[in-house]
Image (tube, rainbow, N blue to C red):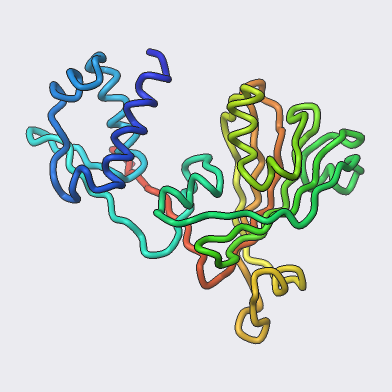
Length: 244
């Protein structure tokens, strides 16, 4: 089953749910109507709906249909179960994103950095420090490391727009999976300065480290995202498996 077909249906249904075209707590169109609407097989529709279930957007109800259970969040929420850029996450939450590049440089990975990023020592990489804003409020500092041989041609201008858009649309890279580690760490001087934090009020912040791989199984990105604590909210959707 081509991924592009069910993925397109999934994204369109997700958009309609988030925009309230399908109202909260109401049933989605029947399976037969969705098949006709998207001109696809029953299995393709079911796969798209299954992904919506996994992401917490809908709930299947035997004998009744598929109910929209999506609940918008008042603050920005970054999902753990998906790989999405800051811009994609902001738009999903109905916010206005912008990015300022603080540092953009090419580096050679040494032994110490190799242990941190997972890149081999001696590899060429881009180091990018970015400040992300939502509705003009600074919320996240990203320390991005991209392996240069996998991501050639990165520029400061691309980093201020969307790196993932460049990788997927221009370089035709397939971004497959990301291993994430969430920690709580002391606020640094850089955090305090750029996120406009009062160290007497906040002395720790949430930090998410991501190791991201392409379809060739190569680790091409290591990113440490440092989140302003008063606007930090991660969400995931847990599904209890039968027989657990």
